[in-house]
Amino acid sequence: MRQQWFGRPGPLTGDDLADDVIIEAPFAAPGRPTRIEGRQRFLEFANPQRATLPVHLDDCRTVAIHDTTDPDTIIVEYELTGTSTRTNEQSTVAFIAVLTVRNGKVALWREYQNTLAMLQALG
Image 1 (spheres, helix red, strand yellow):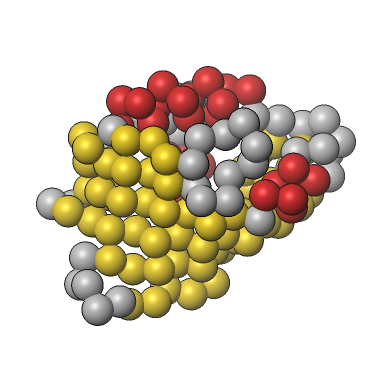
Image 2 (cartoon, helix red, strand yellow):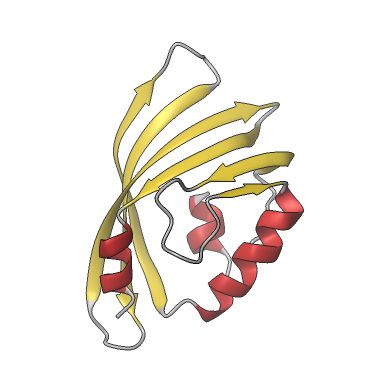
């Protein structure tokens, strides 16, 4: 995922996602989907958002990785740091993701976000 976020400018390819991936954001900001089913539907939503995102991502720091009783699932605590292209201010926002992998691809990505901190970082 880091390679997608930082390694290549332009649209996400979804190479790391299963065709039938489920992406959930239970605490999504108002007006944002809380669940997207399928890689293509996710890319159709995410890429226009990415193209207009007023933040340049600077860093992703893994805080902790927690194993679960399911060997294909982990819980990841991480922080994204970015610089607003509007204000030139840098902010760091914490996330928690539950990731389940099937055949080397992400099949479930459930992300818990600090929506207020994200809105503040976006200026």
